[in-house]
Image 1: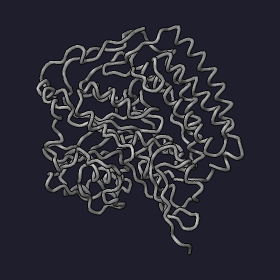
Image 2: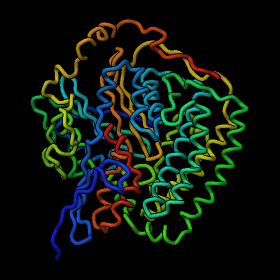
Image 3: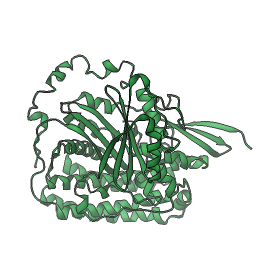
Image 4: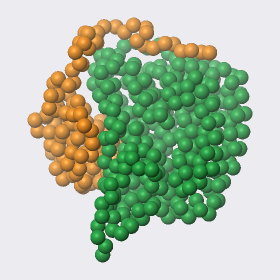
Length: 149
Length: 359
């Protein structure tokens, strides 16, 4: 049981308007999630008394820029800086912009759109696993049945 | 008007328990602004989960944190179970709650010890950790491990506990609670403790909600928000009320944790009394296809797990928002306007776990 949850797909242009409605409804910003795929998919999840409502927008890799919602939910700065540093998406209007220095990591994050194609594929030697993807799992892969002792 | 000074604080500092960096903008000894930055222990675990078969995700999730490890493993299992619509046996749910509440107690006792140490009570620190040791002994007895339990799995749990052991644990819990009561009274009544914590790092109910505070940080400001109210596992069958305080200062956050430990002792007794016989896991077939959000109340607050599968062995996305991450904006608010000497206590008051936060 994880409470009622709903995902609403919206256009990027209406993001700020929809987020403002969430604020007016008294919802708490629970998290922002970025999912890379053919495009970037950004999920803004808001909680109200255990009900989770998620606004979903899609932005293409080449135009990875989304208006910041930190003017409405100030706490969004932390999620937006994280997404900027890990996925290279720009958020114009960020209330607290670290300019790429929020995550002080030395190596380049594998999520970044630069080299996206190669980084999201399994590394060499893992192709076999890709082939196994559609094969039925063995009982061992589904874990043991438990030590009842 | 004094000169502005910027003091870099952390990631390694004698009074910081966790590697976070703060740029403190000061005017004399007053903090005008605190700018946090992270990334010193980022391990890329969300990405690693996409490279492993989805069953292995539970092992990786358990290693996100050394304190609430079991609850991470449980949450990772839950999110897959929700996507694949796997019904786990009731006994497994009770056992998950049993280990979750033990985790909450030992996490809060660890925090109380660190807090005591932070304001100079080394003996109190040792007593808190002595009681915590008894809880770790129970965990070791029932799981075979003290830090990474390894008992959470998709479809249930990996170990059962026999009736005699549960009965013995129930008696020990009562003894541990008595020992804890003596320690708790020091935190509640001692003049110095109150002097160090009361009125420090205040955040109002409205601010805490607007800034997305979770867990004891939110409840200390009067927000009765506890994800256990969602009724995941078997919390809807147990009797408990979220612990709240209203002052929103460091003392209130301390009090919430002190009172929550009593609540966890009570929940463990209820679990032992009500746990039904039966299987502890179910087998399942197939691969996760779909997406789901799971929210669990960890000792530090709400953790959100999101997973998406496309019907193959590997997940498309695995996302974790840990409570410390949500509590950083409220922390920034608490630090603005405080005295430099109060910074360590305020940072500690949100019980930061940067290992969780960075994943």
